[in-house]
Length: 495
Image (tube, rainbow, N blue to C red):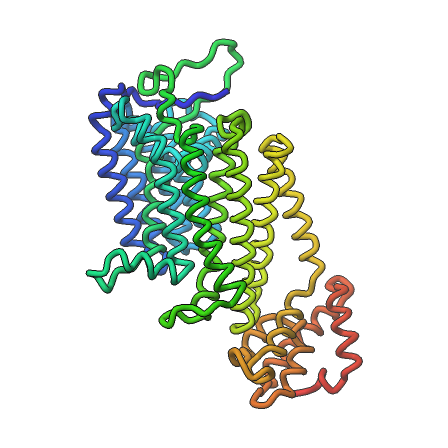
């Protein structure tokens, strides 16, 4: 097994002394991220933040650092940032992520000596590290006689506030009730995106400023002793997922989710009359994506609380509360699917909306599989394998479906010009779907007020001709479309 250890010679007293400095650095970096990223287009700002994060890590871990190590780490970071200065895209962003992990590891990890250490750095900084922030703060700031009670209530209250924030973003009724708690301020509004940005950046920045590395596995029989910073047995009071904390959380979460579930049953599924100041469209169309985020957070909490061998899995009281909460989450996902369907009925289909439908179904399947893992007493590895199987099967089936043709046909059939409601048909989007949209464009040309540009149709016909020009580019889908065009020669030359 690996053990958590800081490579820097910090004693508990030293950690307490420099903790305010580290917190100040983390807050400053988070404020900088807000300035650079919130509601802004991102370019060179990502490079500037990476440099600032490296500097913050250097300032937070000065003890034990050598200038040669610092210079090497800075050179690695410089090389990794050069492509992002040229242009920020998916590939150059990956360079930033990888070189930041390597540079911070070179800077602060005395064990760094080979490529696999860079992979460990990625794991410790990006996968494990973001979950350390709250536990580390509790570890170094709480008195032992207060920690136990605080830890039992921290997870329930913190998660409940996050869920309440997401619900207020998804449900105008809940948002209205929250606003009523502050009647003196008519401009009161929960800025969900900005709050989530700060929470995300705080958790992501903390492991860079307060560095702790997991040591390599060794073949020696004796366990590796951690350095003084983390010596001694872990205080059980610091377990944020103890049986007491999980029980309190599930009771609070079930009550909170019940409010959302009842509101959806009454207003979304039963079409009850909403208050006069809230439209049915705003209620139905607003919350699909925040509710999916809520379900994913709920799934993560259940996995942590019901880990194999953990106190939650052994409790006969916690288990039925977990089943009830997962059932409410599945119901919430079903409501999200209904919300998205109602949205599509008004604003038509796109590729991203189909992807959202599929993603929501996979989330629901994942929640059910979590319950199956608990009931069947399977490992998390089994859960991962089953989710991979469902994902692979979904992708395989999706590869066989002609989504561009389906989207184009649906949009033509349900556009305002054809059905008398909804939005006008976006011809340019049909062009963007490629040659498979040609049959739908033919149908659209018969609708009143629709003008199919000859250049747009000819561009699609040229692409189709190129696909069929050689056996090397042959595809069964293109062949079927060509059969349709051959049966409608007037369409192949229309325009």
